[in-house]
Image 1 (cartoon, rainbow, N blue to C red):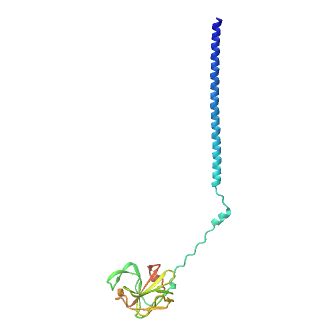
Image 2: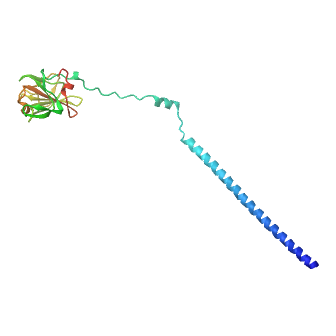
Image 3: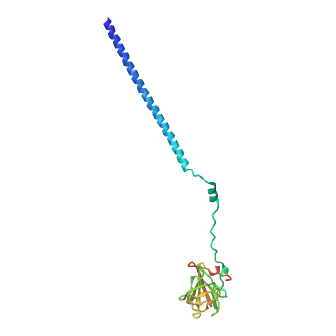
Length: 225
């Protein structure tokens, strides 16, 4: 009986010990897991804190420091460049006295008696009798003297501001020469009848003007036309 009881006591003790071992193992395992969780949470908090500090530093670096003096300088308007004055009509005079018998017309074709057709007209025709003196509309240099197939004896004078004046249907004799420097009102030729394209027109001066290489209406530049 005693031996049987001892066996039972030993068995019970062994079970109690096993239970205690299992319980202790579970406690240690739970504690280890809790420590890992706490460590992970601390690392996460440290990471967030470091990131916040870094972002704050970057924001501080990116934020510009504005000096009130610089602001005042920027606020002051820049000086505007003065535009070059446009050429005034008063700067040019009529090359001859007379009425305009054919006007400038580059947008709308007009009828030509000589050619019996409608065509553009790159200048103006100023009525004037044969041999009347033709004067320079402004000071400049005679850059070309030629025999134009359409408008006859022609003198070209180059002025400032890109302006060139062209006088055609002049008499063959008595014209200025290439290279001459002429003053405003100086005689450069006389009215002739050399323009083949306008032989049926009344005696006149065919006058053209260009600005920067493009035809312009002489009446917009010459006072009194």
